[in-house]
Image 1 (cartoon, one colour):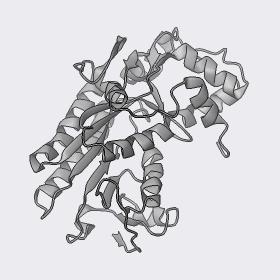
Image 2: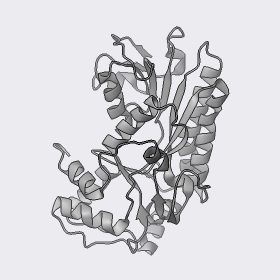
Image 3: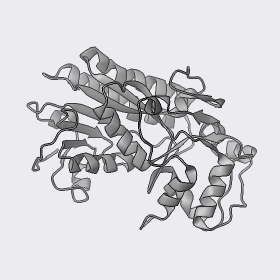
Image 4: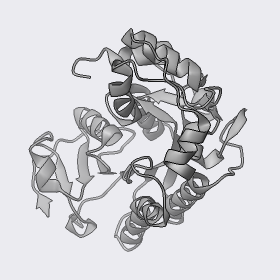
Amino acid sequence: MLVKVKILQGDVLNIKTVLITGGTGFIGSKLRDRLFQKGIKVIVLTRSPAKYQKLLISDLELISDMSDLDPTVTIDCIINLAGQRIDSRRWNTKVKRQIYDSRVGLTNQLFKHFEKASSYPKLVISASAIGFYGSSRKAVDESAAGNGGFSHRLCSAWEQAANNFLKLNSRVCCLRFGIVLGNGGALKKMLPAFRLGLGGKFGDGSQKMSWIHIDDVIEGIIFCMNNPKMNGAINFVSPNPVSNEVFVSTLSRSLKMPSIFSQPKFLIKLLFGEMGEELFLADQNVMPEKLMSNGFPFKYSKISESLENCVNKKGF
């Protein structure tokens, strides 16, 4: 299904046309609108274009399948953010396969399409996650080898699929996201309990959490688009990870609510199994070395400022 719309022209390092997958999600929707404001032609690949058309800026183009893409249109940049939430359900073989296919499978489909196309994207920005590194109390950067369970295998396969575009001479950036804070995502799921005073730490709360504010995510992606030196794996996290206990106490102060309830490790393992161990109890002490060394200016580098901004936004 193709929805025809008016097109505006623009330029970000000679990028005039961007294809976004996951353009109706938490990160994708904000990035989509930001690029559109810069005058860039934005095409959104979504399974339900008719559903989202009324909710989106009218001058966007939505397609439900790559076959709907006008073959005469040159895609300068792919921003691949699509994927089923990894924390939506307890993991089992079926759920893992669905998560894998929604990420790796789709990325492979994109490559197969452009491999046969008359023109190739000059830049591919593809999502990944810091789950690649597994659990590490010691600080790690992009040079660290990954290790661990399902999260590592998933991220590794996802990045390998994105790196196929290197064969087409595309510049490839694999963004390893930490917990993204904003009016959606993980924080949206946490807030109801915390606002009732029912929030608390996971386990003993000592495990490190690497996070990043949504505004820094959006500007960081644009930074990668504009900076030819940015390529390969790039950690999208604040330079100041915190313990789960500090995160919880800071969020509680921002909401002016207590956080006296905690979930012991045995209960998390009982309720969530492998997913709980990897997502809630693992140490994720990750540093954004590439962003820092290339001069990216973080707007929110402290957890207190980030959470204060998030929880006090109108309508959140």
